Length: 258
Ligand code: ADP
Image 1 (tube, rainbow, N blue to C red):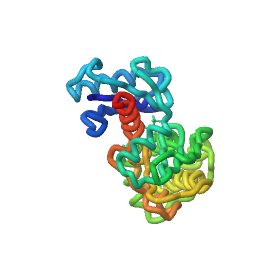
Image 2 (cartoon, rainbow, N blue to C red):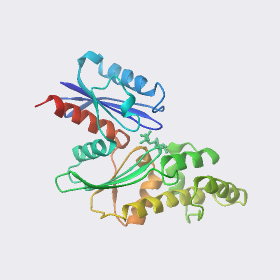
Image 3 (cartoon, helix red, strand yellow):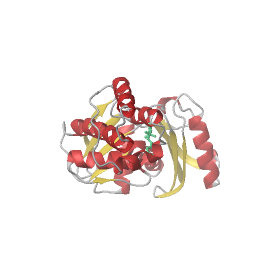
Image 4 (cartoon, helix red, strand yellow):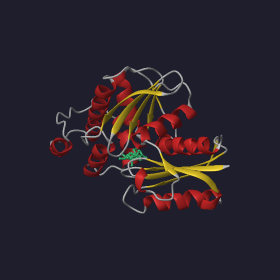
């Protein structure tokens, strides 16, 4: 039986097709999120890679910011539940999940049975989210994929004192024009996101293992900076950005497999 999970985020659309609730047979990611044709493109791409048609899919669940507007889904589930499901499926020993996406950051605490018992969220301010990093990578002309590598080359992170994205942008431009090393600037930017994430996480209880999910988990500089701030190893999987879609595909399987 094939089930499909689609995570329609603010900036990206991700699909996972599962076989019998266990095996990932296809995945797709399109850099267009809610309000665009990104979800349809991602769906088509995932089906094509698996050599399947929509009729072959037993059940589809959508998640993410745009989950309510995807008509091809049979049902939808919250991002929190889907990220937790995806991460616990990947590693049942996960107890804390830090999910940073394009426009929000969440810290999810899990019980020893892998059930959500608390969550904290920043969805009010771009600082501390992927949006902040994307703005900075644009002004520094660094591809977001390589951003973390720059941070890891720094010997002393520059201090970014502004807590607002708009002011931090001017501050970074000003520091750059004063000749501050670009590696140190990138490290400072990663540190500022890490400080915000850690202060969100520290409002709850942080239990190991701590996993990162969402697109920002792909940024090594951020993973490293958060690990330093929390004094905890940060675990990460290649499929970090697909955890919501994976969780949705598992929920879709559970719905059919009774
Ligand atoms: P959403 O679900 O809100 O659309 P995602 O979880 O897909 O967001 O995360 C998007 C963010 O992930 C982007 O804002 C960007 O900062 C970051 N990102 C995406 N791809 C990469 C990559 N290859 N390396 C580092 N960061 C990345």
